[in-house]
Length: 123
Image 1 (cartoon, helix red, strand yellow):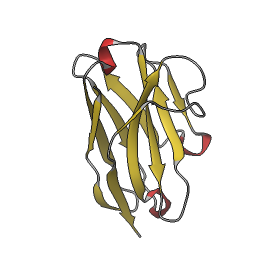
Image 2 (cartoon, one colour; image 1 turned 135 degrees about the vertical axis):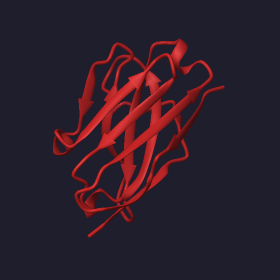
Image 3 (cartoon, one colour; image 1 turned 180 degrees about the horizontal axis):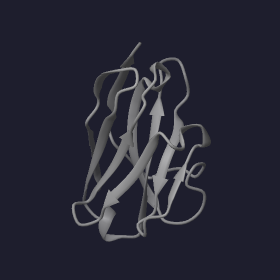
Image 4 (cartoon, rainbow, N blue to C red; image 1 turned 90 degrees about the vertical axis):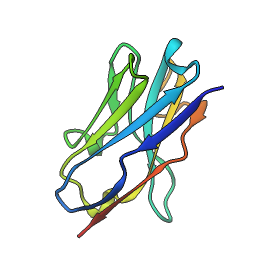
C-alpha cells in the first residue's frame, strides 16, 4: 500500500511564499515512480502543476514556470513544491500524486493521491 500525505498549506498574502511537502510511504520511492503536484480551485477542474521523475527531471505547466519549483528527496521519500510570488488565483487545494515513470506526466492518470492541502492567497 502506498500513502501520500501533503502538508505546508495555509493562508498567505499576495506575493508571499509557501513550501508544500508530500511524504510518501510504502513502495513508492523504492520503485521508479514519478511524483506530481496538481491543484483544484473552487468550481474548477483539477489541473496539473508540476511533476518530477525519480532521476530529477522536472515538468511544469507553462503558466507557473518561474514561480513554482518542484523537487524531491529520495532518501526522505518526500516531494516539495516551492511556491513564490503567490497570487489570489493560486488559491486551491493542492494534491500530490504518484505514477510509474514514463509516458506523459501531465496527461497520464496517476495511481496514488494524497488528501490535499489547502492554499489560500489573500489579496
